[in-house]
Length: 404
Image (cartoon, one colour):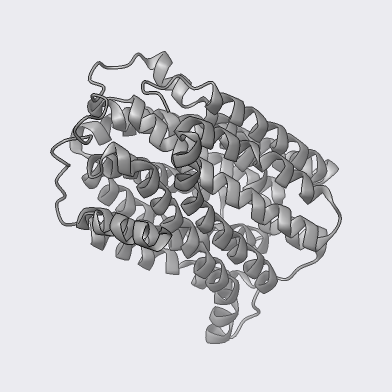
C-alpha cells in the first residue's frame, strides 16, 4: 500500500517540482560544505569561537535587515528570478571572501553572502507553493527539505575529506589555511550548478486547490498576523543559532574528534534530517498539519537533553534525533504559513518568517559564542532545549485559516 501510494504521488508531481527539488539538492550540497568547513577555516586563520559566532550572527543579520525588502522583491519580480539572482550573488560573495583574511573585509562580505542565502531560501517557498496544490504541499515541502538535507550526507562527508585532498594537491597540511581555502572553492561551482534546474520558466498551477477544497485566501493579511505566523520560526532560530554554527566545534572540543570524523557524524545527522523531511507528511495525515508540526517540534527538546550526557554515542543519538524532528516539523510549519497567506503575499510571508528566524539565529549565535568561551556547551544546550519547547507551543497555538 505504501509503495502504491508513493508511486501514485510521484506520478502527480509536475516537472517544475522535480526541477526545484534538484536545485534544492545542489544548493543544499553547497550549504553543507560551507557549514562544515568555514568555521574550521576561520580557526585556521587564528580566530576563536567568538569570531565564528560573529560571522554566523552577521550572516543571519543580513536576513533581518534585508528580509522585508527581499520579500517585496520576490513578490514583485517573482520567486524564480529571485532564486537566480540570489545564487549568483552567493557564488560571487564566496569567490571574493576567500581572497581576504581581515575581518574588516570579510564581515561585510559575509553580510552579502547571508543576504543572498536568505533571498534564495526564501524564494523557494512561494515558488513551490505556486507549482503545487494545497493537498500536495505537506508532502512536497517535506520532499524539498529532504532534498536539501539528505544531500548533506554527501556534503558533510565530502567536506570532511576535501581539506585533505586539497592539502595533497598543493603540498600543505590538512588543517592549513590554504587547504581550507581551496576546499571552499567547491561552493562557488555548486552555486552555478544550482542555477541550471530553475533557469527555464515555470508556470503556476491554474487552481491553487482541488475542487471541493476550502477557498484560497485573497484578503491581504496585516503585518501583525504575518509576524505571528513567524513566531515559531523566531524560536527555531534561537535554538539553531545557539548550537548549529558550533556543532563541529562541539564534537571536536568535547570528544576530541578529528575533521574527517566530525564530517562523518554531520553526514549521518544530515541523513537523519533527510528522513525527517519525509516523516512529516504521514504524521500530518493522521494528526492534522498543525498538531503534527507542534508534536514533532516538541520531540526535539528531549533529544537535545541527550547531548548533555558525556558519552559520544548518547550525544550522537541526541544530535541525530534533533535533526530528525526539526526536519520533520519545519516543512509542515512552512506549509501552514503558505496555506494561511494569500498568493500576493507569499513572498512577504516567507520573508518575515525568515527574518524572524534569522534574527533569532543571529542573536543566539553571538551570545552562544561568548557563553561557550566561559562556561562551555552545557548552558547552550539547556537554552536550546527551552527554545524548541516554546517553538512547539507557538505552532500549536498558531491561528490557521483552515481546520486541520
